[in-house]
Length: 509
Ligand code: SF4
Image 1 (cartoon, protein in one colour):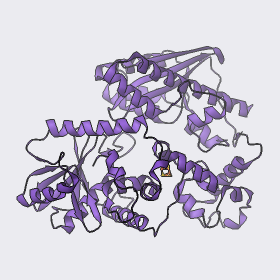
Image 2 (image 1 turned 45 degrees about the vertical axis):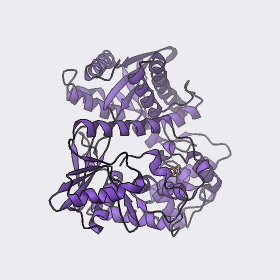
Image 3 (image 1 turned 45 degrees about the horizontal axis):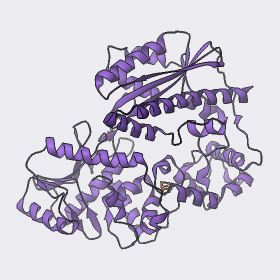
Image 4 (image 1 turned 60 degrees about the horizontal axis):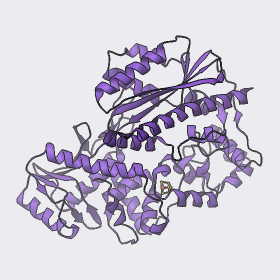
């Protein structure tokens, strides 16, 4: 099921609503989103961002493309009113139609709108069409894993089909952006380390949704990266600040906040506490919070509540001085699976006056252009063997490994590992910021830290998500203003990396 605007709008305002697929999808991201969508005043929502609109549009276009080109001979209920859809879906299933597109099914308090229902031996199997990959991972570093937010939607459809005695089995599928059909078997353990099945996860999510709808559970917001694209962002942040919520501590998150809440209700109380009563032989009473983590969070709480907050180093660091520094950042559209810009700000002898930006941009979305830009960026990054590369988080390395596998004529696997060897390239986030520094901020993202240090992006809405949306516009309209906006945003990200490096060097000094 696509997350269309109507899908959320129809749920607002009533606690007697059924549990739906999109509700479970949201619940996996944030239970409070389900609560807020159901019980909060719709006028308090933020505007839907252009990026989210683009995702909706892309999802619809992709679905139409799949159904138009890959599939033949199906019952299409797209233009049927929601009122009639369920009756017509049941009639189509009773006739044994091989494929039903955009049907609607319900049983008891469950309502599902699977993109497709496919007839197989013994009944129907539900499927969704997604304009993204059907699973997580599947690269050099990670085994492919089912996406839980996809799984719970599909499982809800299976649950309904079972209640109607129309299920072919406990399985579903995703038709994904790569043209692959990814199977979801709900009875298999999720992994060797995790004996729970996807069906177990679904049952937990379904009961969680029921509990929220019946107000047995009243959820509380929790600050996380998910909030940035959520339409309750402004409202939740205001509530979190008013509650002085522990999730405003970097990397604490919902689960740990919930575990600590009964003992430590606010940031201010946490900051003023002594910890010894919570620690016994390296353990604490809080699930998944050991002594070390508790002490780290406590330090952060004190920093956030300090009357004169200042970042500091918690261990010594070594940042070599070299004559050529390359601050490197890439832009990727994960749904088109294209790396469309490799940006580098070069600085010589540590002198900001020498800075210059070099951007290797794909002039269209073809693989030839992606390969050309990759090859040119690669040549630039490796031209000076004494240059030191700085980047922020492992994303650049992960994408370069993928690009190498896609375009092996550009460089070898060993070449990529050599480029990202710690003597040649420093991951400023994982190698320096995270292990060695503390900041009086809510998170340790590049945007947050560089802004804290006084850096401003030229764009009024700088974000990786916005960049993807501008690239989408560039692909469709070839407006040079969109291209320029992407380049400037990326250049500012590269400069921000330099600002954070210099800020950390100043702490060390
Ligand atoms: S803003 Fe964050 S906490 Fe609030 S509903 Fe959205 S994701 Fe949940």
